[in-house]
Length: 449
Image 1 (cartoon, rainbow, N blue to C red):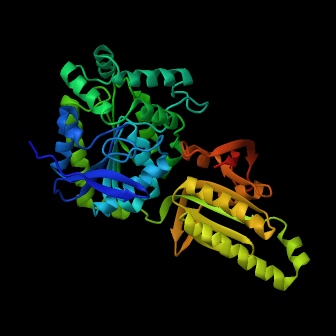
Image 2 (image 1 turned 180 degrees about the horizontal axis):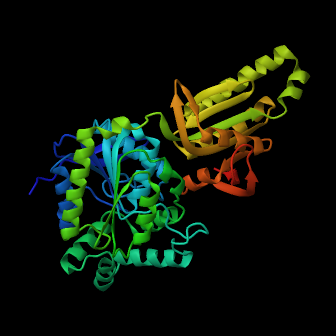
Image 3 (image 1 turned 30 degrees about the vertical axis):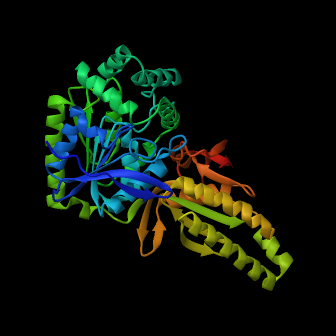
């Protein structure tokens, strides 16, 4: 048996993220854990350690605990996907991994999808098991759980902190029938997080929706799902596979947790897939200019009248103060200035929550200059070329901004869906038609941050 690797820590903002590196294969694999984890205890669970051993046999494997669980810093509540995405990047940087294949399992799948879409230059391939793009029902997502069913699943998960009989019942649903192994896994979960953390995580996961991200995935993708999965319905994995361009789908007879012959067979497929990607250097064919980004547009309300009131000299001075203020906020929230035309700004962000907070900060601070701005945001696939950013997502963002009122920050439904768990509150503005953009678009005004 392999000696348990050393636990190290990556710094992500103010939080320490525990990670380990094992294996010396020709390419890197980052294992995004399911739900809650513990990088040290995982090696003592045969069902988990076998997967890690198999992956480390042909790669340089990087494993980590998401913030709030395992050996990573415990935090109040649970973090949104955008923050978890920053943690993945911090771990890769600490492990000196410029590019890696991402292996996401179960609840780690939405995070893996979002990371691959937002940072394709850091991802060589994507491997997913037993995952989903959304948990709950919606009119255009009838396969999701109802609110009642979702609560029932949470109560079932919490039985892992209960009696022996309750533990065995839950683990049987997950596909673990061996009682000794089931009890070891339950202990692993109990020592990885508290019931309160599980409830907080459940509250955030309820709002997760990365369906709009699926069509933007450009890296080679392999998706597996157990046909008898009772924890994450098979239809959820199939839904993702049908919407990720060029994805290879592998239905496997079995349940939710990769064990036994299903594990062996799937990891064999993963090894072939990732070796093929590495040897063909398939990621080099990916258009590095196409990334998922959040675009922000702002402009001063009533600028023509204000300029006429102040005169040219004072208006130029005020405009300079306005520009300086916006640039300070862009630096604060890691935004990138892309264009400035007159009194309008165009910027991009790699996280929608940061973009919203930046827009709100700008809206508040310009009032001290006696100005009001309108701001609009949209998240979508953008094309970067020669320092410029274009594509339909940019047009949508500009049109959203046109719909905003004085002092208002308006966002598309895509932005709203991607900031689940961030604590940002919205007021629905209804469906509107955006000039030059097909269909009706649901817009939301930011009410609180």
